[in-house]
Length: 147
Image (cartoon, rainbow, N blue to C red; front, side, top):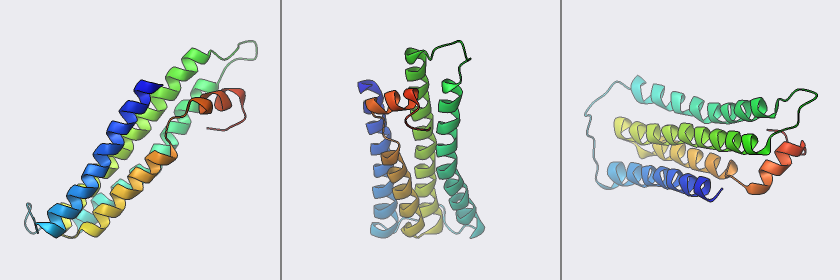
């Protein structure tokens, strides 16, 4: 569980870095590396990043639900479920990091840091909501918490 928490800290830290880069590069240094781009491109990327924010939760739940499915005569293997929890958490965090990276790209393409920073912050807050906890595995496995 400690290695999972360390990986999650590194991924969350990268999203915070994207947030700072979006702000400082666009607002502080007035950097516009892509020149003039069609206005629909940053908008499309922002919509896609928003969909990724929603998708991360759905993918995590699907992985955990599949791991909780056992036959009536079988018992839940806690080691296998812990591995599925790790996989679900890392997959969710990878999707959220992609949304944060798209937020940085939206800021650089649009020339305004606002939407990029909002996407990065939303991604980071989503990570905090899905932060791995050891007691969550027990509650999910016992049925006291739904995925």
